[in-house]
Image (tube, rainbow, N blue to C red; front, side, top):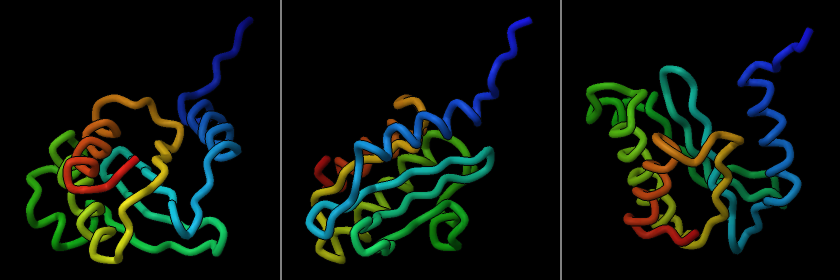
Length: 122
């Protein structure tokens, strides 16, 4: 009998492999994305100092007030714009994109495209 791994286990394994290759530095921090069933979270992280420089999520009041739903492609695009604006305020232009083991389509792609349009380079 063949046992199949759950999607969450597969995603975590993919993320571990990605993190072996990706690392955020002070000059080029890491844009880490996580999505749950109800919300999305984005952080810009400096891995050498183990410090979160900027964060945004669909749970924040100012972000949630502008959204009809918090778990769709439009919400992801808005979150990408918000995280990019916060990063540019702090002087961060270049980042490394960490998709967190998620497939690069749909919400993850919308967040990345919106962040690029708002001024982040990756």
